[in-house]
Length: 114
Ligand code: 5GP
Ligand code: ZN
Image (cartoon, rainbow, N blue to C red):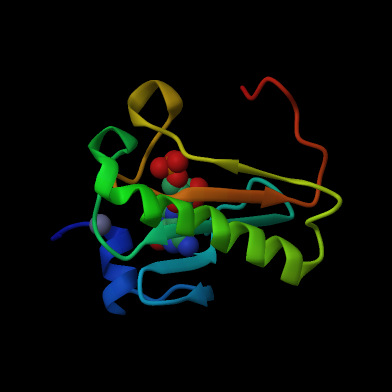
């Protein structure tokens, strides 16, 4: 997808601070972290929003969460706790239209989120 910053990270055209990669998933540190740990986990395939997912994407979405779990265990905050968030469209504050799971950790998370 042209003009998609996350697709440019997948292709290597734009550098990112990568923490995990496999055939379908890429994870990197958020450029503007909202917690001591803030990792963005994306599918390598371009999907604009959560609204664009269908049944065939279910395993892929599962892999985003499994990547979050793996990073949480590896980085030692799985037991203390962490938050995963996927924003969809304007009212949720989605700013990059290539779906991504935020992985936030390292501080007490407020509830409900703002
Ligand atoms: P959204 O607001 O769409 O839920 O999340 C997009 C996230 O991507 C934001 O947390 C933002 O800081 C992050 N982001 C946007 N551009 C870049 C970039 O060029 N590099 C990195 N590492 N993160 C980015
Ligand atoms: Zn994209």
